[in-house]
Image (tube, rainbow, N blue to C red; front, side, top):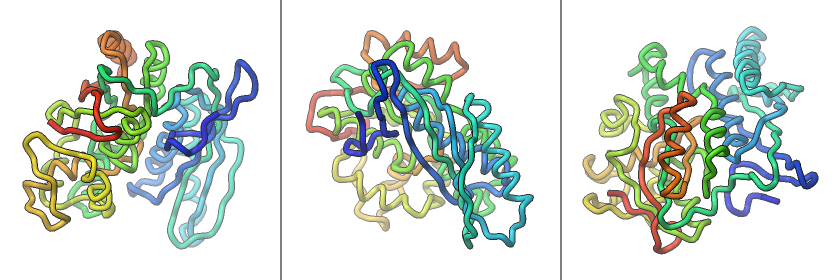
Length: 315
């Protein structure tokens, strides 16, 4: 039913009139020092693809690539963190595969289910829709600050817990109220994933920068260049379809800081970010209430408009 042609979050394979399988996989290198937290974050990130499509995760399989020199205790803590988050999601870890690798990596392949008529795609947004985001931005920037020892895992605890938290409650609200399109915000930043949604839907989008939820310290770090290594690649990708009402496009990575700070925030590669939803304007208040009832803090960040497919205006 769904492959990779529209950059959706998971593949969808229909079994019968009542059941479709959701299939996804994700893994990456450690972004925090604590192995248990690394496992939790990785699992939440992989499970998010199932939630982004309105599904319920059932099983997960571990993908483990670690140097044997680290010993079994470290790997055990990583896998325990992943298993604990899968358990919170109601999913079962049923196996996996391990290899000896010089650079540690961990991830999961996840299978979930959804009713074929209730699949949430990242296409289908309509002019007049409101855009809702369910987690703050800036995990890539804060992760970089951690690596450079500008932050500690104590000072960055709010960001770590956000990355380790499931998008389950947000997905339940999304499915209950009904949205026109949805996705999760991960490696291409908010601009990259909004572009995929708008382009696939044949519409344009307006993003309100001052309405975005952003973790404390992110803009300060972004201004001083404390950003993930691939941020400039994301900026280069999105600058061709993004315009600003009062902000110039950057002229490459050596542009003045004032031209780059906000771009760096909007192009920050997220790990286990929130859900981005495009919902009918007359449903937005109901959706926001349903999210809040489930303990989610949503933000109304923009709107869908008519215009060249995939273009974004930042106000």
